[in-house]
Length: 297
Image (cartoon, rainbow, N blue to C red; front, side, top):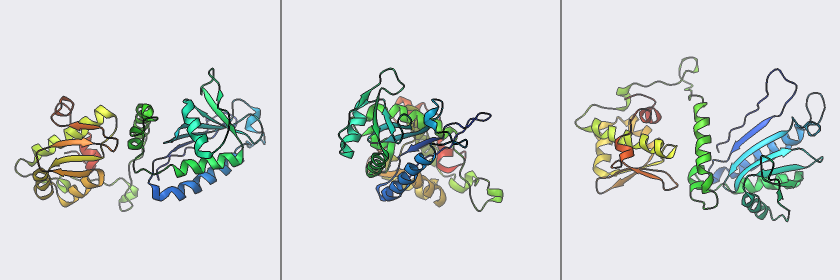
């Protein structure tokens, strides 16, 4: 399960809100883990209603407990403010809240607040909030979040915003650490560890990298699949890439061999980019090599 949780306090000020940013990007097999996490966060929401001075956040409009959730049911902002033991689940789209209420089998009014940051909201108590978390956990039945959203007609319009969020978080991502390296430094590789210099393989590799990079430039995220000819696949595995290089390639992309010559990058939502397109043929390959192998080729 992929989720991002950030506790963010502004320095040099009195106690201020904690922010939780949770992205539901998981596989169905981890639903129970997610549900347990949601119960923990639900309890934490209660604990965070008081600052170190003992004053409830609800008494100060500058303070509040905030959670953002990106899910296949919609995008929600959950805040603790207003009446005691009451939470607001807010949304930009009314149908998101209507779908959530349907999943909870709750009969509640969706309040319209057009002058606020979020135009729609519902009020829930603690028990109902826990039910909402459980429903969000039950909705995780996909291997890739953005791919799932792209396939949902009532959520697809949020995909550009999610891509922008994905790109923003990728920019602050820590580089993976290797426990076997000195001082926990990121593992480094040499070009020779992943690529062999043979025949026309390097030209074929450049076409692949340009297609992958072109896909990212066009759609805002890396592909999850690569369609190519069986002949090219054999050449990459036996001549162009080392065993490590090919293993790393397969760890990032699902390879789909074709009988005829083809080179197409795809994702789980059905977005594609063919090497024969202008976007791919004119794209640089820089970045795609480091994404695949953590090395510049």
